[in-house]
Figure 1 (tube, one colour):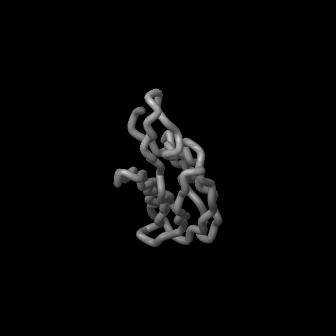
Figure 2: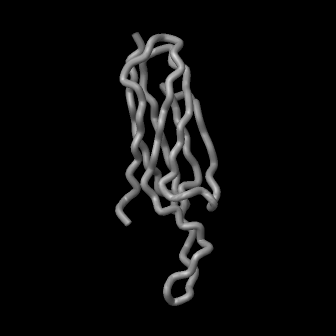
Length: 108
């Protein structure tokens, strides 16, 4: 599989005090560790186990993921913005890999 690819959708602009909707998706197979390969050996667990979203360095959303989560995890959540800044999104994999993305928003 190719390296996981994070995708995020954040409005480019908003008014001060607006509640915006943020959507994220990361392409990832999310192997639970419960399946076996063609030789009957267990396929090692490899899942995104943590997701966080920060705005200007302050955490606005965080969750831990379990093996039952589907492939290509998708999140949709709301955040209130009072100032311009950047959202930083971070996904952490079982093997220690960290995938991140950043989106800026201008508050008028």
